[in-house]
Amino acid sequence: MTPALEPGDRALLDGERGRGAALAMRLVVRMAEVARAPRLRDITQAHIDSCLYHGQVGLDFAERLLAGGATASIPATLNVSSLDLLHPELVRLDDDTRDRASRLMEAYVQMGCRPTWTCAPYQLPDRPAIGEHVAWAESNAIVFANSVLGARTNRYGDFIDICAAITGRVPDSGLHTDEGRRASVRFRMRGVREGLLDYDLLYPVLGHLLGRRGGSQVVAIEGLPPDTSEDRLKAVGAAAASSGAVALFHAIGVTPEASDAGTVLAQGSREEVITLADLRAARDELSRVPDGAEIGAVSVGTPHASEAELRRLADLVEADRPRIPFYVNTGRAQLAGVGSIADDLADAGVIVVTDTCTYITPVMQDLAGPVMTDSGKWAWYAPSSLGFEVALGSLEECVRSAAAGRVVRHETIWGS
Amino acid sequence: MEGRILVEGDATGPALVLDEPLSFWGGLDPATGEIVEANHPQRGSVVTGTILVMRSGRGSSSSATVLAEAIRARTAPAGIILGAPDDIIVIGALVAAELYGVSIPVVVASPTTLGTIRNGEEVSLPP
Image 1: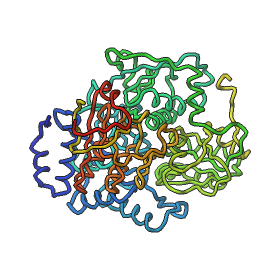
Image 2: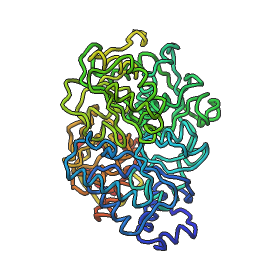
Image 3: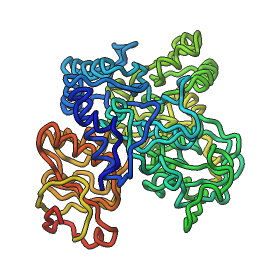
Image 4: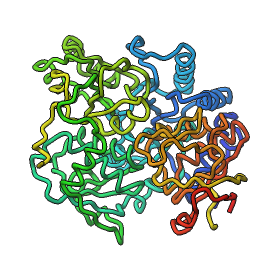
């Protein structure tokens, strides 16, 4: 099926804005055919993941677009890269890879994208409003935009993100449509006590379970407190988009489109129960290091720590100073936003990483033991991408563990 | 086998039927074609030259680049059969075709059809 194209779309295909824009529009139209979209639609902004270096193909594509004169036609933010431009000494890449990563970043800036270098564009001031159509890449940003902001984006990957930014157009399909946003499965938590609902670690663990059981479906979750914070919802989404391909979850009574179950459930949706035992098993799948075991480092801030999380971390480490390397990943805008808190963190021995993340580029090395994190996403990817063993704990437990040099957790909170 | 073609191309190879979806980013080493995802039941299997069969995609939007990089490096599967369309896989294959002229077919088959494909059996695409 070929989507109905507007005159502007055809003009781009015909090369009116150059070969780069024609290539971008050709790929957008191909994706519309795949999605069986009846037409294309306008978007207001894009978030670009293609700036993260994974090999020659990324450079080949960006340089093909640049050589063809392509530029972003709508506001576009850039995701993390493999370099920390503010603290370059932290990243241990060979010169050749560093040079290629840098060329890739520069190519996207030259195409008119903003050098935000964050995986959490929803923490920037001009984030999209409810109902706004955008094209975001980066799995955690996608699920946050759809679920927590109520903005509308499909699960855009590398390459198509910049094509959308260049053309300002995407296939009108999937999560851009009302029908596409209804949940086909509804999860109810059973036997989960209030104490656990007020425990930070519940949220990445729940997200991990939603990803495992939800796959790529739109899911609904019932039983979260109405005032669940954005940072906790961020943790749910990031984990669900790592172990699964979840791009939208509705937390009933919490997230903006889910005032009640009736408004978000698809006809014929099925129901599944989540028990305390399920949650414990999900936690144990991510956390393979037992309580009391020695650890070599801590890494928090995946996705990038918000200003609230940076402030909280500063308070916690003031009382409990780390005696092993303690990393926090955050965006340069968030770091600037907390002012002198950045100095407090450094004084307490916390190593602040910006523009990139400890799980995608070599920052941590020569560790004396496993790594503890508060992130379900980090815990999911790090064993593969870095070869580390991982312990998962709340931010508070991470700080206490870093002070003790071993895993310290509130085991009783899980009811065992 | 019946299926809907998402990306055109011709391929024949032994089916590698994955028990669980694979995120190419963090899960596939494009230098070697090996599955490296720590929790994956088929960790250590090599996808190069196979017809990769999986229910759905998973995880990172960087998977598009990793697939395209594997196609460039000639370590990619010869073709991919999915249980549901996956934009991230499709764009990776399309971009590699644009840049390098190598098109690996990506096909969607029904879950029933997917279930009839035996690991190791020779499969040809398009169906």
